[in-house]
Length: 205
Image 1 (cartoon, rainbow, N blue to C red):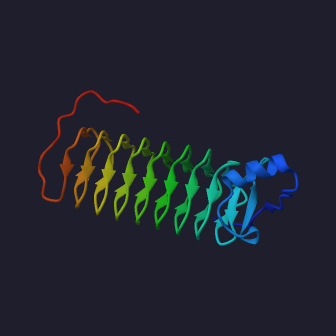
Image 2 (cartoon, helix red, strand yellow; image 1 turned 90 degrees about the vertical axis):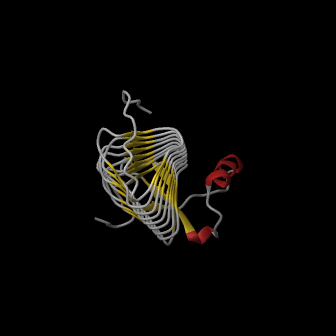
Image 3 (tube, rainbow, N blue to C red; image 1 turned 180 degrees about the horizontal axis):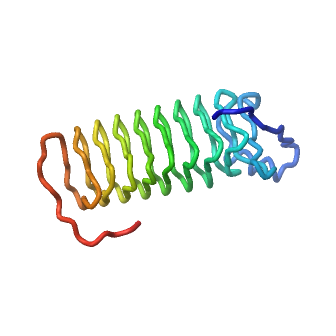
């Protein structure tokens, strides 16, 4: 899954190019970072020497992969997205805009966008969409075609297999949110909470 690295050395002698490089380059010694080369031959984003990025992965020119992160082939890290710490990005993942994936999180076939933050040992897969300023952390798992956006928080051991979590709603404990359920506003759903939120017509991000 994680194959050879394809990289290139960048000459920063041109002042204009150097200004752009300095804007997005991670704060690390020159020897500790490198540019990724995308499958089409274009110059990709910054990769730390400690990170592993497959040659078939796509990393946008302004994206950053640092720490001990591992990025498999067949995934996309675009725009100004950051993948760091011990995060793992698997085939089919799309991480874009200003999304941040860190901790020991795993991103499978899913989309993480906006200013979303994924951390802890969270797992996102199954066609899920996490957008806006939403956060998924702790041991939480989003394993189905759910939509999590706004300022929503999914944490602790919560499991989301479908439905929509939006606004400032929080799902925690061991609560399970399944297909067809919609959490809106400031509701908090924890282990032992048997409330079933109202389900108006689905709203898409």
